[in-house]
Amino acid sequence: MERLRSERKVAWSYGTGLGVFAGCQAVGVWFPAVKLEVFCRAASWLAAGFLAAPRVETESGFLLDHPRIAVHVVEACSGYDFFSLLYAVLCAIAVRYAARVGLQLFILLPVAVGLTLAANTARIVCAVDARVLCAWLPAGPSAEAMHLAVGVFVFVTILAASCHATRILYAKS
Image 1 (cartoon, rainbow, N blue to C red):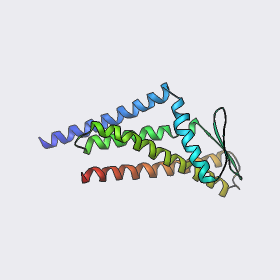
Image 2: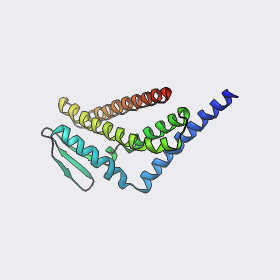
Image 3: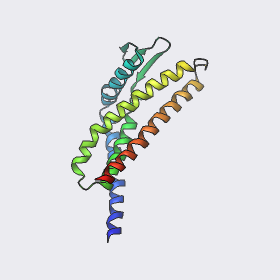
Image 4: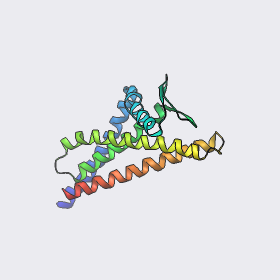
């Protein structure tokens, strides 16, 4: 009986994660301003502070006028897909391991937003620093590949650390 209950919790956790991810993606489609106004604005503001670069608002996003390289932070740089994935995984872990789930799903929302802003700020800062350090790379595919690699490294690291910390937190309770 206990094994069946455990298998049902696992199935519910996968379903919850998938539902949360789909819901977040739907919100991003129905309200695209969320990506630019919430995630891009905050991450570009924080990154401008870390890089000591002035931030200028443009039609399609924000321009960080770094002394060595100008960076345009647009909707594609919002980190919204990472937020959707992170929130879905954290909710799935909560459903799998927590005793009372309802309130915790709402508590995890600001946690996921904060972690996404931290991750996206780190990604922007690391991508700018990597581009400045590798100025010898020609603009084009190699620079884009480096930008993508930095983003993947930062996001995967923070996703793995967040999931691990959440599982430890729920295992102790």
